[in-house]
Length: 450
Image 1 (tube, rainbow, N blue to C red):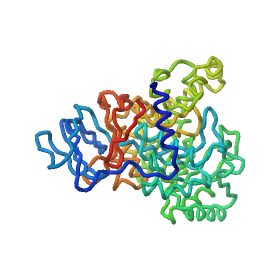
Image 2: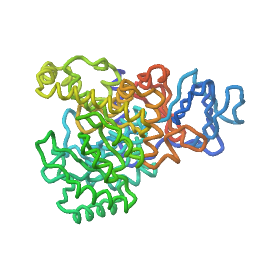
Image 3: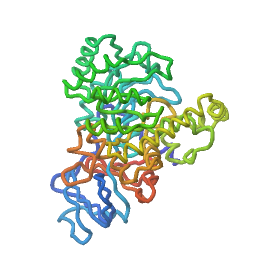
Image 4: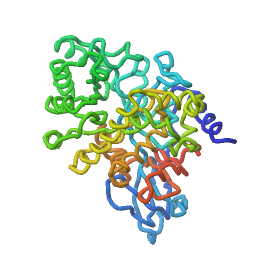
């Protein structure tokens, strides 16, 4: 069976029932031992070689040296020297919008959301934040997902994002909240809090100088009101000056790279003082021009398996290639990508907390699953070490979502959510794509993308 068909069948199985349990965890009287592995635990610590991971129920019970005998009555599995990393956390994604080579509100159904959560999980992403483009039908699913009653990756939602009247975003943004006064903004935050969202999202962007932008007066009211409800706020940004004002206003997360100018020490110092998180989403800028040529992943089987039907054919078409080659904004996009990488390197070097996010699911070219693994590669190309990148994609994301007591690192007491790799990502971060097994809640899942 070919790869695309194998993954399609798996995702169909995931979508056959909206509300279903994850694979049943091991009983309290039985444990699994995954021996002979190299463990990268997500804390940033050096890999632990030739250790055993002891799993009791849905949790990690112990991490043992190779010479230590396994607990009695445990089932021992040989990891064959492979590398184990925590499941990934995507701090910036979108759900329900994609189907085939189209993105739109018409695709937003519970069954499509379930299918996409299954896809994320199949690629080793166990947690995803859907950032501001959700619709009414997602809210009944939110608590079920948090409680482990929904198939696929666990998701978190910012509900309806905030935007300027007539401003970004345009497509499928009929549900965006567009207050015109601080009082309206405060009332809208209350509506989101009543829906039990996990985050608040704002778009602060003028579409290249062509559209209205959310004013500082409005976004200050949003941030203050959200914090009163113990909700963190993420902002879509592009410009350095907007980032500077947002950080001063108390925003918690810059959800994209700063791409117009190099960041300065004043901004970095303010971010450090306030604990502002930075999500670079490098892949979206790369996608904006890279298909004018032939990216090295174009024929990667994992990449093909992640795409919606018809998208790969679109990407390799002469028309699409010519469109990117002749794009009048191509040079500006390439410069923005280079600036984004420089800024990530400077942020990381200064000790700013970096979280992996991709904006996957917002457009057909932003494939859910592969984008997250490509993002790791681009982050290393920007100058981050592989261990730092893995930490950004695991522990840091879990801390941002306030779920780090259970997930994000592989330590005793944490959930046994991890990926088994046939390669060492410290030597080459692209080895995160060599997925052999995926474990959720202490059980090995029956299918992976490859």
